[in-house]
Image 1 (cartoon, rainbow, N blue to C red):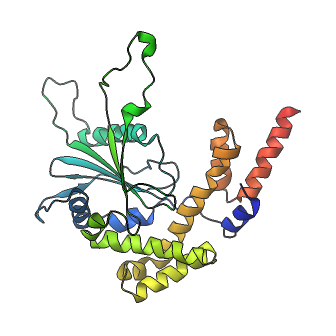
Image 2: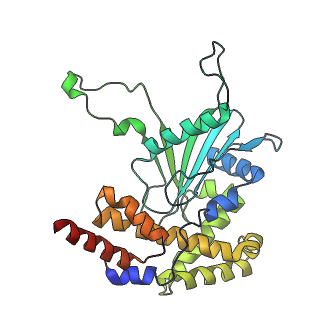
Amino acid sequence: MQIAFFRHIYSMKVNIKFKNSVFSLLFNDPDILRELYCALKGVKLPDNVPVVINTLEDVLFMDRINDISFEIGGKLVVLIEHQSTVNPNIALRLLMYIARIYEKIIGNGNIYSTKKINIPMPEFFVLYNGADSYPDEETLKLSDMFKSVKDLGLEKAEPVLELQVKVLNINEGRNEAIVKRCSLLAQYTAFVGKVREIEKEGYAREESIKKAVAFCKNHDILKQFLVNNASEVLNMLMTEWNWDDAKQVWQDEAREEEREYVLKLLDQGLSVDEIKQHLKQEARENEE
């Protein structure tokens, strides 16, 4: 991990408490979600099919709200935008997430009653638009995480619990049929692509976002959204992308039990270099 790189990343201190993502702000609307769902499934639903948003108030991931949960036509759909490397444990995270959503839906309903409770059928999507190479589509399964049962004399056992997550690459030029079916999704991927394109030209991240916002306003890409939310978009993207980079601190250099300590320091506004010094100082004190 290059120190100079993180000095560049943290040249602007970021408010980690800024939880919303651009994705959750942009798509948090029933009509937009109906169009997006139709695009993902390749179907056409009437405009009067109700969409009820029931996203959890706290976050699926520890850093930001990049998930949207909603009911549509008897289904409970969970959408997650992922700009960093797709986590291999996402199916387990979603298992815990969907349990909390069902708890929210049922409310005070008596699950011990003799009367059957009807619940919406779940469906999970991860929309990937990170910088790393990723296939157009991949399905991640909870059963792939299960331990071997060979010690029981079983070469293979059918899982009695399963959860499947469809991961779709929505970067420009990928899954174009899906993206073209939803105008807002096409514009969003174009905007994210423009930020990365400008950043590759050597501009700092903050300047790249500002230039991309100006370009998209002038070319009618998310124009009204960016006019109304320009400063929020800057804060959100800086938080999202810097936070993804900062997570490498505990993944690469810190023990698992130090993660909460790292989060606390980040929340206080410390830079990555400063956090590294804290961790080194703590290690020296422990050795003494």
